[in-house]
Image 1 (cartoon, one colour):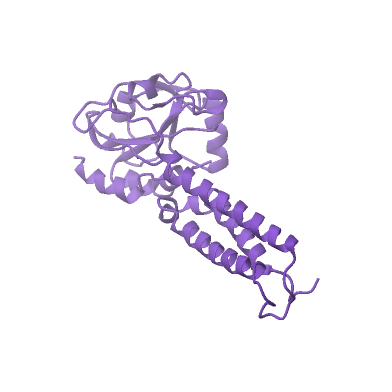
Image 2 (cartoon, rainbow over the protein chains, first blue to last red; image 1 turned 60 degrees about the vertical axis):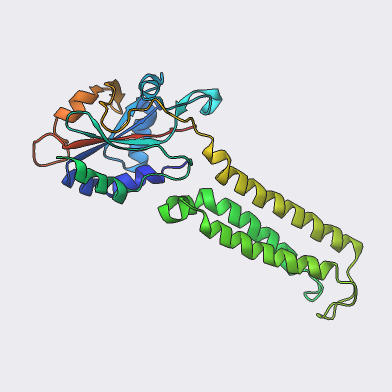
Length: 113
Length: 162
């Protein structure tokens, strides 16, 4: 339902690439679902599937029982990692509707070398 | 229907309340400015509340109303009250879901913080190919002309279809 964040990433994808940031989206959706969504919405960046909530759990982002049929899903969160895989910026929203904006992320991208 | 008798304010207020509520998930959520804080919806709700107020006033006017219509029937008072109560419920539900329910998120105190190394993972992309975090960091962005590895990775966790 709320894909405005993913859309805003796609819209600014050239700017992200220009500063050397690779966006990667992660959810519990299967590759099949992602493939359909990508072709429908026209997203051209990487979408990864974590149907067993393993990665989402290792990042402590599980929102228990909030998915379809009471499945565990991810709460919204954004991390900016540097080339060593170290977190340089993180956004854990306190309100489901409030998400990181592209300009915020691009600003944080200045921290990368 | 006699347009002078028709209590249009109460109906307009009710319809505007519904529009104000549904315009968030179906329209205003698409723009960060109206998504992060629902000021557009709050303005619409305020306009709806004003209409409902004047509609109620009209329905419960003790004497002949200034528009020349007769004193309103009991039915019109019941309808006006009912629509107002429904509208108040809708507004309350919206406020509750935006300002209270939307904050029911796990605290995620164990999430990697600034300065920590992000946990490694290996997941399938939309073509079914498995990719690891370290591969994403060390391999060039396919869409880019230059072949150097990215300076950074933006991980976006989202809830997915439900």
